[in-house]
Length: 318
Picture 1 (cartoon, rainbow, N blue to C red):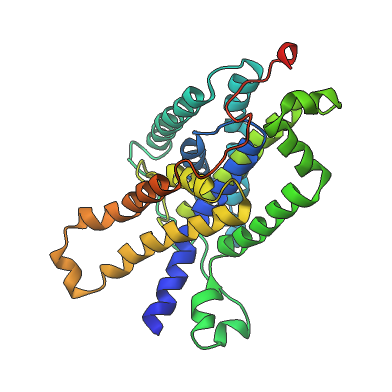
Picture 2: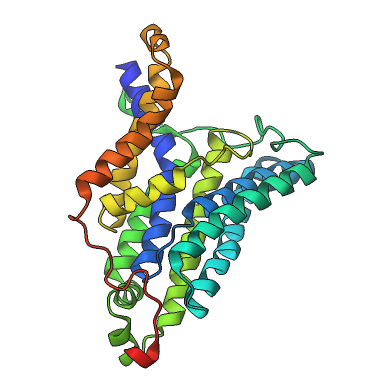
C-alpha cells in the first residue's frame, strides 16, 4: 500500500507540468491558434524560474525566492508567447512553423543565457534548499494511504488542480469563455456581432504562455532543481497529445495528462526494483512517449479540433 501511495503521489508530481501546459494549449487552440510552441514556452518558464529563484535568494528574498521565480516564469512565458501571437495573428504566418521556430529559439536562447550567467556552465546552480518542498495538509495528510498519496504534494500541484477547475469554469460558464470559443469555431460570425477576433486570439496565446511557463517552472522548482538543455525534454509535445486526447476540454486534458504522468511515475518506481536492472534504461525512458504515440493513434479521427484552429482570420473573407 505504501508503494501504491508513493506511485500516486509521484504521478501527481510528474503530471502537474503536463496539465498546466495542456491548459495553456487549450486556451490558445480554443481561440483558433494552434500552439506547437508549448515546448519552447515551457523551456522559457523553467529557465526563468531557476534563474530568478537562484538570484532572488542571493538578493535576500529568503523563502519567497521560489514564489518570485514562479511569478517571473509566468511573466516571461507571456512575453515570449507574444512572438507567436504577433507572427501568427497580426502577420498571419503559418502557425505550425512559428511554433517550431519558438521551440528552437527558446532552447538556443536559454542555453546561451545559462552559459553567460553561470560562467560557461551547462546548467544553472542547484536549487536544493531554495526551491519548493512538499506541503503536508494538516489533518488530511495524516489519513492512512490517502494522506500520503494526495495531501503531501508540492504547492505547484495544488495550484494546478485549482487552475483546472478555474479553466473549466472560465471556458464554459463565463461570457469571456463563450466569446473565446466562438472566435475559435467561427471567427467570421463572432466578428459580425462585434467580438474582436484579434483581441481574443492574443489573449488565448498569452494565456498559453502563462500556463506553459508555469508548467516549466513546476519542473525546475520541484523535480530537477536546476535548468539545463534536458530539463524540458518532450513534455510540451506530450501536453499537446493530452489536449487532443482530452478533446480540447480542461478536465479531459487533465485526465490524459495524469495518464502520461502515471507512465513517467511507473518508470521512476520500476527503477526501485531489482528486476528492472535487466531492462535497459532506454526502454524505461521510452515508455511515456510510446504510450503517447499509441493513444494518439487510437484517438485519430475521433476528436474534432476547434473548426478555425490554425486558420489566420481575414475580415475581408468572412
